[in-house]
Image: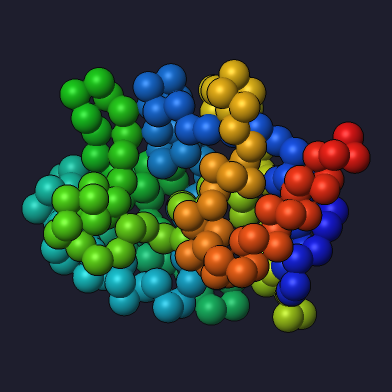
Length: 192
C-alpha cells in the first residue's frame, strides 16, 4: 500500500498493467455483477437528468426497472447504486451492432448531448474507492471474468493501470495529486 495525500492505495494500482479491450470483454463491467455501480449522493440528480433525457433510447426492460424501482436505489447509510436489470445489467446499458455493451450516458457525452461523462465509480473501474475517517481507500478489484482481457492488453501494450486511469483520477483528485501519484507509482515499479 502507498499514500498520496489523503488517499491510501493498494500497491497493485501502481504495478498492474491494464487497458480496456472492449471487443474482447464486450463491456462486461456494465452487465456482470451482483449490484449496480456505486454512486455518490451528489451524482443522483445528474443521473435523474440523464435518465429523463435518454429514457427513449434505453431498452424497455431498463425503463421498466427505473420506473418501478427508481434510477438509483439505496440510502445514505447503506450507500447508493444505479438500478440494474436482474441485479446485473446497468439500466443505462445499450448494445452496439457487435453486441458490445456501452454506457448511454457516456455515448451522449461524446456526442455533445450531455455535459457529464458517467458516474465516477464507472470511470474509475476497476479501482474502487471507500471513504473512511477522512481518507479515501483505493483498491484494484480484479475480477478475472471482467478484467483478464484488459490485463492481457495492458501487458501486451505496456500500459499501466495508473496511466490508463489518468482522466478519472484527475477528475477525482486534480492534476497536482495525479502527478504526485504517478511519481509514487514509478518509484514503486523501480523497486520491483
